[in-house]
Image (cartoon, rainbow, N blue to C red; front, side):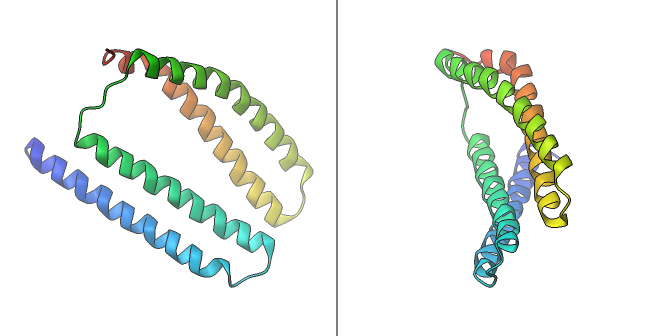
Length: 142
């Protein structure tokens, strides 16, 4: 396959993924009102918000594929400051989530706490990866 064919295939995949995320968002919005149970609503909201986040990220990727993305020195300073501060916060959040999970014995709160813990761990890994690619981002500075 040539590069334009790969790009077209990639765009098609991202578009398909966005449609799937939109379906989840719409379904969650329709179902949220069907229950008064705060745990059920929290689970549905959690999945809806994850899908909204995924859709936003996919749209950002899509836009970046059709333009040149550069990072100014100021952009890199913002990233550096955010990574530095957020890494400490994430480590504290992980410790707190682990303690809360240990103390919880009910299945639904444990499910939600477990999801939050995994989310915090993924944020921690993301911050480490972002820290690792700052050098790559710096190549494109002004």
